[in-house]
Image (cartoon, rainbow, N blue to C red; front, top):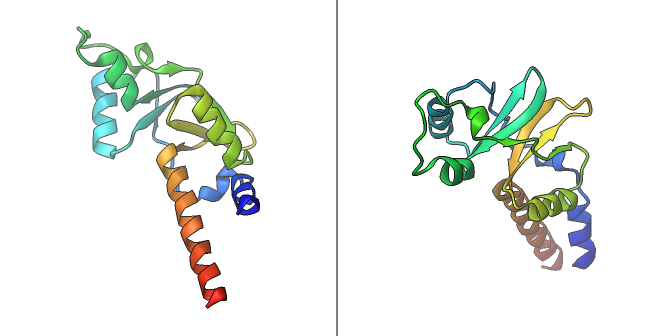
Amino acid sequence: MRHQLKELLDRHIAELGEAKRAIHCEPELSLVNAIATLKSANVGSLVVVEGTRVVGIFTERDVLKKCALQDIPINAKISDFMTRNPVCVQRFETLGSVLNKMKTGKFRHIIITDSYGNLEKVVSQREILDYLLNYAISHEETDLAKAG
């Protein structure tokens, strides 16, 4: 079992495949539109980019911790509330490494870039957990079929 867990955690984050493509925006996007985009797209984060360079991430947590119950000007920009310089990982990082970075940094979304550093997708802890559970369930069924 320990060997299987290590093998699973050594898989590349790119193998998640099902992860949604990142929704991104410019830093000048209004806060109102940013929140509306989170809601309408039913996502937990927006990646903030300047050109192809990632400069921030805006998440549901930012809405709750930085925006809720605050007097915010109507012309507020997402750049005033985003998390700057978010942790990004490349597609060949292992699931174990990515989970450790998320745990250490206390965040639930991580930005995946290609080998050139271009935005590829965002992965949530939930998507990683779903992948791990689906893998474990499918392998348990395979093991039971072999035993039966």
